[in-house]
Length: 192
Image (cartoon, helix red, strand yellow):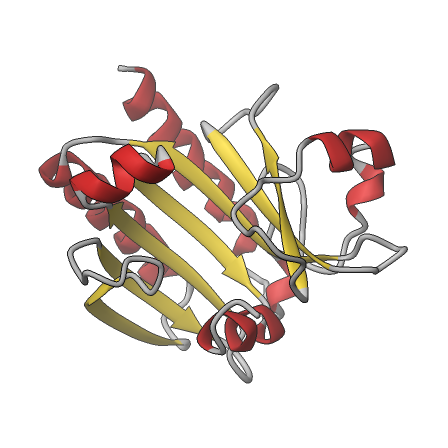
């Protein structure tokens, strides 16, 4: 029941996006691309919540938020390394949903709402292997709305392989992602 309530809240939160034409107008948990994360967290909170996805320093790093969220179980914020302004480059809201059937069903409902809001924006749907899993077993079930360049909003079911769940402690999730093109290019370049 909690998950259904959260899905309904997500639908309602999309209503504020109806007149938006710039990816920076979209919010997840009140945050938008281009905002300073310092408006939401202190420098020490940012440092203490940095997710250790990488063993070496990269062009971007990821901060996780797990507490006091209204719509999601977890939010991940991508920041450019050495950016003293802590400008948000990508925001991902995640709901843990283990069942693929349940995730796909909830995703269809969200996508219908987003389709109604963005009828003039190019949308692509796909199923693909996740870049982080070299085995190709982990899958993303994606509906992506492309703005200018590679800026996009993506609604996806992320289904990790048993090996990735065990080794990296990943969970299957329903994600709503607002991503700037520069982060997309970084990911496509191998997360360097």
